[in-house]
Image (tube, rainbow, N blue to C red; front, top):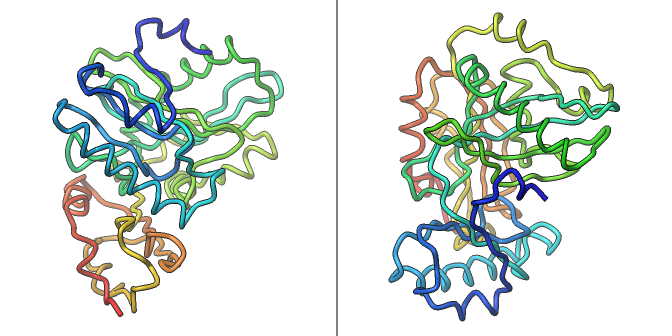
Length: 293
């Protein structure tokens, strides 16, 4: 539907059966592969070299089998996959809505942080004055252009974008009728005092000029202590949470997650004066805090 705005962007959708039969030589590399219906970056991979293709296909099969034990088919499905060109640039996640007149209302903007270029984990998102100042106008302009193609009213959404070095914004995904999952959306409540559900249902609009003026240079971050899908949560005896929290300088909220049900043992909201703490946390081996049965 947005192809008119991105006429040169390469993508194709294939079934799993078609995927495993694709010869590596037919791929336009580098590209990203991901389930058309997915969550938490399960089954998302960057393919850079032809020789990596067979092993990535095997890993995707393993991921999908493991995900089926955790998530319903409505959340993660192996029925079809998207191949799309690799977008180099900064990545942002946004919760927003269109009001009753079709005007875009941005409720938060988070920047995603990666350990390295091929990292696809959801471990850390952060926000703050600098993130808002560099992204808000671009995000609002994107929503206006999307609103010209798709007429939406009183419509909430969560979407993710990348902004290239040249300043071009390209959408990665748009999720209708929901905000960010697994507690991520609550980072906005800690950073700017915005409850996105309250703002949507009451059709309230943030005064971003006042919010930005009220913020200092601190970074507000969200960390998802996610574990590999290969670890069966039922085999975990306990987690050394007290040891784990020592990695944070200023915790705003620490939430326990049922690791027997989801491959995650906690989510953490925290504040820092620089991004050095986030860099350390991205490299942290979380399995060291597990006590196995």
